[in-house]
Amino acid sequence: MSKIRKFKVYLAGPISGRNENEVHAWRSAVKRQFEEYLDFSDPTDVIQSDKDFQPNKATNPRTIVEADLLRIESADGLLVNMWCASIGSTCGVIHAKHAGKPVIAAEPKHLNNKTLAFYADAVVPTPQQAAQILLNILRSEADWSVLKSTGEPEPFDRRKLMASIRAACRGAGCDSIVGPGFIFPEVIDRLKKNEPPVRNQFPTTLINKVVLETLRTLENDAVHSPAAIEGVSEEWIHVRDNKYGDPWLHMQNGGVSLDSTAWVGVDVFSPKSHGTIWGRTVKDLRDIPSDDARRVFEIIRRTPGITRINLGRFGRQDSRSTCKATVITSKTPCVIEGKLFDRGPKGTMQTFQVRVQFDSDKGEILQDIIKKLEEDGLLA
Image 1 (cartoon, rainbow, N blue to C red):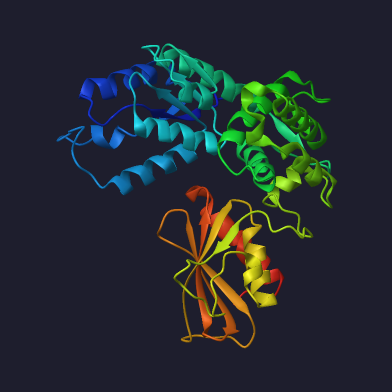
Image 2: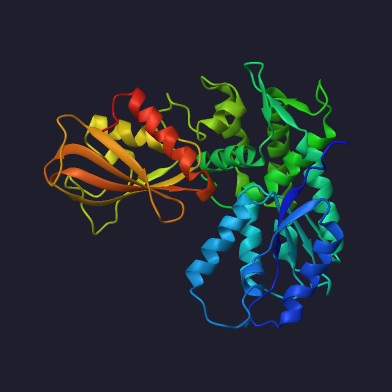
């Protein structure tokens, strides 16, 4: 008999200011009922192992939040029991949605919160109902695969599709969670209603068609505030017509074609009060006068999973004969540390930080950057 595939679900809900029963009772009930089918990421597990459990005990807020965000990123979906208002739970819902995770909410007291209704894929009365719907969603997509233009299939990944939709929104000047937040669930629903030529195997051409149909429908739907996604369908068409022509490949290249003349995508930035080895503030890649240095950052910023590049300290303590860069992992979550060696009026070494969207992907992203820099002869 084949082993049942289990999915990991993050259990979000009010904790601060609540007693032990309010924090644990509903979580325990959901775990008992669905333990055969689901594994649970429970933010209260550490608290439960503490014999001096006190829900209101002061703890480093940054430590708590960073740990919760990493748990959400590593989960397959999020279940939130919003039996009362909770700032932390709301932030968790938005973070999960931004990561392309399915979000199912329970609202036992029928608060009819419009923000929750907007971000959640479904809102139901009980946590048990929410768990069942989330399980159904995860099961329905578990066997999906994407048939790339090369003819090779690969597992369907919600994060890649969400990243591509966000990139199209950003390219159209709609860089916020609002647009992708209501585009993505509609795309998923439409994919489920489309019958691919081979069961559960979606060609990239079909994904492209469904996304474009969804965008055009929503842009003409007054209920969804068309201004939030104005021009996104045209940006999607532009991606389809560029040298790649394959939206799934577009996702893998960070949403920017390598021959594009438009400076869209990840920002390269130095604070206004802080100079660089080139003697200027950098707000845009074009602010860097060195062609080789621009090429280094251009390669890095087009790596999938990158969200930002921050330029830091600089000096003359180290140098190379030609422009080179080195990158290493950082103990700081979601950060890769780097050094760029170039010759500028103020120095020969520029530090920088590469911010990544998911800490769990940091190692893979680091190796990807190293490989690309090495291929171009730019790795120190």
